[in-house]
Image 1 (cartoon, helix red, strand yellow):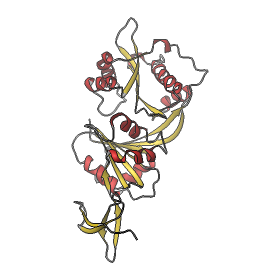
Image 2 (cartoon, rainbow, N blue to C red; image 1 turned 180 degrees about the vertical axis):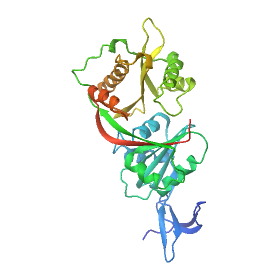
Image 3 (cartoon, rainbow, N blue to C red; image 1 turned 90 degrees about the vertical axis):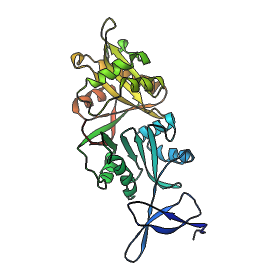
Image 4 (tube, rainbow, N blue to C red; image 1 turned 30 degrees about the vertical axis):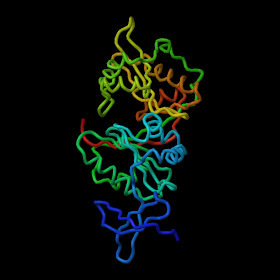
Amino acid sequence: MARVIQPAIIVRSFRCLLLAPMARDADLRVRATYGKDNIVPEPLLRKATERDRAAVMRYLRAEPEASLFIVGDILARGISSDIHELFIQGAARKIEGVLLRWRTSLIPYAQELSADFAPLAEQASRFLAGEGHWTLSGKQALIGAVEKRLRRKPDEAKDHFLCRCLRLKPEISLEALPRVRNATVADAAEIAALLERIEEFTGPQLSAAEMRSEIEGATRRVTLIREPAGGRVVAAASVVAETPEAAMIVGVATDPAFRGRGYASACTARLVQELNGRGKSACLFYNNPVAGRIYRRLGFSEIGRWRILIFGRV
């Protein structure tokens, strides 16, 4: 039996108040609810601090692709910043799951689905009670478990394939590849404008200022193609959430008037070349057969399913 150090009162607005002992491990706090004949302890969900970094990183790196967004944010910005924060369900020595808030995007992660994710779902519900456009995304099975406990129903749900490329197929031929160049902060406004023109992209896109900030801060790298003779940006692809093992390719886009020329494939291929050359896997999502054929031709293969719940209309 653990030696009791001192009593502590654990308070949750949506639960009863209970006087409970605090165990030897200060992080091993419990919330409890009254049953008819007994008391059932439940794990808390608490906000992570820098003291949790090592334990969290060990937990997340069991699945480097599935936890890519969370690990990438921690490496780039720390455990918390003005635009993101991290929550832990379970004790420091036995993490059951985590929840990342990045702006108005929520990403839960758990290695196993055997836990009761009520605390995690409760925290997500508190964020989702706010106004505006929110998303909740993650491994399909985990999102299914969390969704059952949300107080708010999503307005839309989308399922995607999570894909990985360890090496470009040597037989591919991309005529547009020589036209690809790396973006600078001077290109930020045009890249943001391109993404706004893509009807397939649901939800708010980065503003020109936000795009500039991410390129300048090296949390986003972008490849692009311009019209002949140095015209406007007509295709682009970005790398975000880069870790020592992998990185996510997002924002793959071509202006509708310039599609069918291999521009987006060339921008994507250049990023894959750069990542693979440094020993990293390139990851991305797709949710339509046409995109799937293009990415498989480049060398991507499916490694999982990803579900996105959308709350609020843009």
